[in-house]
Image (cartoon, rainbow, N blue to C red; front, side, top):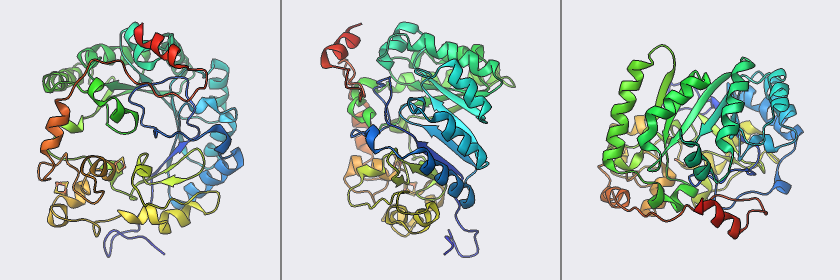
Amino acid sequence: MQLQTTIGQPPLRPLGLLAELTHRCPLGCPYCSNPIALESRGDEIDTATWARVFAEAADLGVLQVHLSGGEPAARRDIVEITAAAHRANLYTNLITSAVGLTEKTLAALAEAGLDHVQISIQDSDAASADRIAGYEGAYTRKKALAGEVVRLGILLTVNAVIHRANIDRVAAMVDQAVALGARRVEIAHVQYYGWAVVNRAKLMPTREQVERAAGCVEALRKRYHGSIVIDVALPDYFARYPKPCMGGWGRRSLNVSPSGKVLPCHAAETIPGLEFWSVRKHSLADIWQSSPAFSAFRGTDWMKEPCASCPRRFEDFGGCRCQALALTGDPRAADPVCHLSSHHALMAELADQRDGEPYIYQRQRADRTAAAENALVER
Ligand code: SF4
Ligand code: FES
């Protein structure tokens, strides 16, 4: 069976695979996109299964694998997993917090064929960065590991996650990425999924802050033209049109969860009634072509008005299904970011809700007690 967008168009092939190797992570970022119910270590698929998944992904047309988590280096077999992806001829990108990844392991990863590293930074101010990450010393560790990545000749991207507490320091964060030797910096405004929904009122910037940051990024692009690429993921809640989430459902990419479930996007499990197939029982090609979850919102046939007759439906695919469900209760509705949605006014209402309460941290480690969390919050 060949999947086609429209008659005469080439079959749909995924280009990217997000391999969520584990949900374990030493950090507790309050905007983590991982699900609220995290999968446990005992459920994680083994090295050989990941190797098979990578080979099947390459056969399917995937070019790039993002080794992610949680913290992917929390897997003891991270070097073997990376080597397997490299053997499958996939471009390998490690998305790491840099905490828990040693210089020795990084050197072994480079040896295993790792092509690219993405390190997230929480702020240009050390105390604020550690408070946001919920981990003392994270800032220093990230700087040291970024230096080591560059020294080993691996390409580095810095992912600067932006929200109310750090948005006024966008310029300093870009300066920091340049100083670290990154070739690319992503100004990634928080997207409100997973833990970010829990902390929405604590993270939401004001419209004035967002506009100031946009002006600042334009100036930075001119200043650093030719030396670093600056990409921006805009905050949904202040937009008039939605983003084509995942490049369209089941069109460009697959997410494999730590236990082997294959999802069209990282938040797909929030949509009730979807049936996800696992790599434990099915080949990746079978899942891509036939699994009920991938078929559910592929193409445009599932749409209702205003999307069904909208000329933009082939560009944005109606926006994000998970956000449509979360904010309207209907996964087939237009993403309420769209000004044509009857729920659009809700975005402005939510964007106006702010509180100054402490963050609720993403946590899976058993040793992170409520008392320890409070201590972190109070620092
Ligand atoms: Fe996109 Fe639907 Fe809005 Fe049209 S109506 S712009 S397809 S979200
Ligand atoms: Fe699921 Fe956007 S996060 S479709």
